[in-house]
Amino acid sequence: MFKIIVLLLLIPALLIGQKKEETKFQKASKYFFQKKFEMAELLLREELKDNPENRKAYSYLGDIMLQKGQYDAAIELYKKAVDLDPSSAEEEFRLGQAYYAKKLGNVAVDHYKKALQKNPNLKYAYFHLGLSNLMLLRDKSETIRNWEEYLRAAPEDPQYEKIRRAIELLKDPNFKIPPPDSDIPIEEILHLGGDILKTTEKKDSSESAGHEDKKTVKQLEDIYRDDDLN
Image (cartoon, helix red, strand yellow):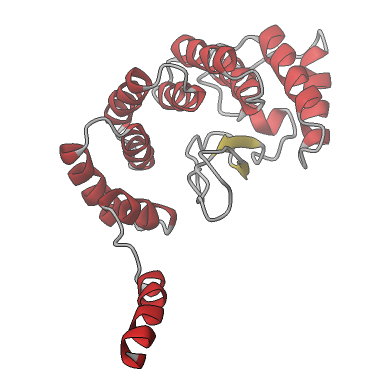
C-alpha cells in the first residue's frame, strides 16, 4: 500500500518533468533565430507541406528568401501570408522592402502606406517611405514629410540628429538631389554616413511575446533585416 501511494505521488512530478516534443515549426523558428537559415528553410518548407495555413511560416521563409536576394520568391511568400491574414501590417511592410530591393519605388511606397493603414503605430514605415522617395523616386517633399513624421514618432532614435540635419539640407532650395546614375552617394551628400537605414526584424519569442518589430542600424542601401530577423 505504501509503495502504491509513493508511486501515485511521483506520477505528477514525472509528467511535469517530461518535455513536450517540439513541432516542426518550433524547430524551424529556433534555427531561424539562431541564423541557421539553411536548416530553417528546410523545416519551413516541410511545415508548409503539412500545414499550408501557417502564416508565420510563409513570413519567415519570405525573410530567408529576401536575405538570399531572391526577391520574387520573397514577394510570393509574403503575399500568401497577407492572403491568410489580410490585417497583418508586417507582411505589407516586408513587401515594401522586397519591392524596394527590386527598385520599384512606387510599388514599395504603396505597400508601406498599406502597412501604416493596418497599423498606424508601425513608425519605421515612415522612414522607409522617405527612403523610397529619396533613393528611388527622387521626391524631396515626400522624403521630408515622411522623415519628419518618423522623427515625431521616434524621438528616441539614436540617429535622430543625423536625420534631422538631412531634412534641413533637403529643405534648402539650392539643394538638388543627384540623378540615379550619379557617382556621389546620396547618403554622403546628406552627411548621413551611410548608416541610418532602419529595418524591422523578427524578434525571438524568448525576447518578446508575439510577432513584434524592432529596428537596427545598417548601410543606407542595405534593405535586409540584418541580424535578428523579428
